[in-house]
Image 1 (cartoon, helix red, strand yellow):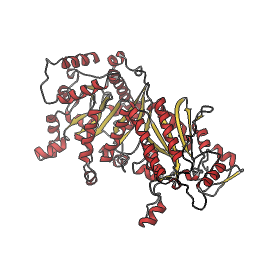
Image 2 (cartoon, helix red, strand yellow; image 1 turned 90 degrees about the vertical axis):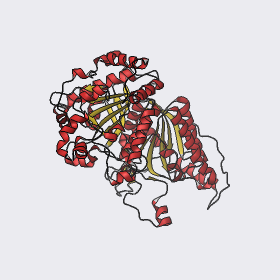
Image 3 (cartoon, helix red, strand yellow; image 1 turned 60 degrees about the vertical axis):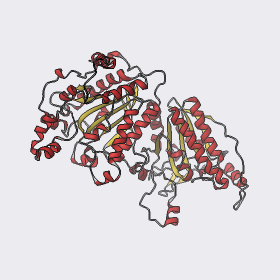
Image 4 (tube, one colour; image 1 turned 90 degrees about the horizontal axis):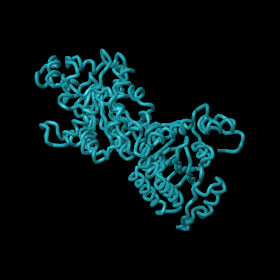
Length: 570
């Protein structure tokens, strides 16, 4: 930012008093434009005061190609260093955000357009290796026009070098976060800026491989309004969220808190008391008989708490993450980091709505392939970080439309089912309303499957069954009885492991009470699962689903152990 007393906003041309503009973190109070910020100023905005410890810049080849355009490359470097007061287009530091350690690598567009050369690539790689050694989250703040042409193919190789460094952090289970600022293009966008676990962007920030000018001049293609802006990227499922500059630091603090669970054996919720006091009913004989069709109607009630309602009420914090990173974001699936007492989890749910407008916007809770792929991405992230997974299911089924079939709906569901069977972390699923067919199962391959007392779970809706078998949708109540889709029958069949009691008349009459009961149930289930070895979790999940449709082997010691575990949890 300029050192004069006045700053002219590039967005609205308003003349701003520089000290006030600086206090606003470089954001225009009139039009909201986020001006570019130098690396040093950015570190000061993000890190706790006095916590920054700069990492040394690595040694690299100074002028490997002896490149000259209108002036020699060393002369350009000298000018950039004099103009910015920095050695290179990046500054890396060890520091704290709200008291939590982080390794930050911050780029500066003012230094040769933030171009990716050997020094920047080596600095990013060194920062990642430091994060790996110290088991500390890595934060990358990008601002770049792309690869540094003056270093030729050596610049190109930095894309592979940095990508490999982030892959090692994936293997080690270390959280990585990318903050995209304007602009981020070329080799930086096609490597470390978009490989992080969480990708956030400032409002209006542009991100892409080829810039609009290159696209227009190369293939003469007209571009849509707002092309490659953060808002465009969010709509197309390519980033997790847009965060105004004033909210970046608190958002990062939440991410660090929920994305870096304790590695000392686990949180205090692993307590036998939590298991005993959980309100879950595990004996079908303790459940009253209800008319299955009435249960269907109650489970579909528009005032029934949705996934977002529960996420706001059950958990102490929830930070939504968006997009499948493949070009889509389905509003029928919501998910992100959540905090349940001392336990950080990854929460994923199907979202319906309470009124026709929201129901339509959310596809009536029927997910598209993008939704299932978003869920898969979040669950893989949970496995990487060692977070338990909680899924909340309320869907009539997967979206059956033309576009869904064109994008591989069946494959997306199949991939999720296989993925959940192999994740090495605890998984708890709760059917909060409807559990419809494969669309529900794609989020329900869990160690523990619970259902609310007015929930249903079925291979097909009663109306669909009646239409096919009785040729009459009026036979839906008869189909509901025959399908045994109510909680009592599902518990008797072993399809669910327990039933969460609802307030009298249904969860829609007392949503707050329903959420409190759900919180207690989840606390108890996680208490029983946290701390178990990954192999045991996988074996238990395998045996759970392996046994369906076959009589139990009472001589198998695992059956007796499961019975004892169930009794202990009552």
